[in-house]
Image (cartoon, one colour):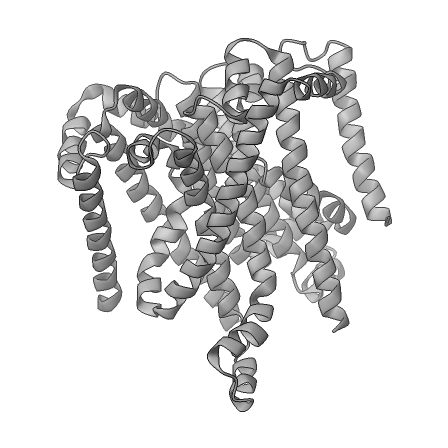
Length: 248
Length: 250
């Protein structure tokens, strides 16, 4: 544990050095140094306008994540449980997954209009597919004995889903949620970067226009820390669930 | 073709037909979306323009360069990282969070380092795609059964021969997954950075058409991207299926 923490510190130190080196090679006009960026984060946090951007992004992200998780689970469980639909749909899902979805953003804007709903929709379409793919594969790999037991016990659809399918597939579902989490965040931010007047993505694009490298690096580091912490928590949950299943 | 493949074709054609009908009947107004047949027609007209062909050629070339660089670089990086287990353990959180940060925000930095032109766009594609390949390489090398390593030792294979005869074929399915993801992410990285930042290329043309209410160009190009990416993916998918069949036959 101590060794892992030490390794993590070493990695952070390494990143810090690379950052410093980039800063000294490219100069302040291209990339703000780490010290400046940290000071800038503190200064930004005190500005009242800043929290508005953060709240906007968080609110869009939470909504998008909810849609991606629930929608992805529903699609994945259905496609996993119903063999034929799964086989028909899987290559289509994979094809949609690999599309550069930015190209579709104008379509999303035309359907949802400018503002919150478009961002939420864009985040959700990024996250929903991986959640569905992972959930589908998880349900397919469930031990058939469990499903037969469910039938012997005459469980209805709802009971089968909540007491057999979801618990048995939970570890893989959590892995899917982890991937979906990152992609949803990416989707929301790209959405804000292209057509928005609020949110962290807008802040970044605006700073790129003004060549305000301090703000760019400040937002980038905050996003990174947020994503890393959330990911570490989900990863711990993931490992715990996989481990527990192996014990049973 | 199998029954599943026919059904899949029917589902896709049905969806396109439904979209066409909804657009033609006016349920979806033409300002939001034009009928798929019109998109195809617009695309054919666009492909006849030399200017548009130049943009498309530029994007495809950048994607190809980003793809080759990220797959080869990602593979080498994966092999190196795997050789240092402690380094790898520390690197894990970085790799896991990579895809949550929109890389395009470093575009200004990339311009300073790599200059104006295609290189920054390519580098965003590489930054996006290489990590998928690194993860796939690590995964593939991890899954080599220990017994095969023992076989290699029994046969007194030298390290290069072992890599060629045992490690590589064994990790191949996982590497192929990385190649597939690498292709997808190269497209995403290149087109997205053109879309948001650059002044040329397919992504920029779509954003430009959107800003000018030029729906026919916009949807024609969207169709082009969808068709090209799907075709490239399908080609890899077919290749993968063939490999799997070959493997199961032994």
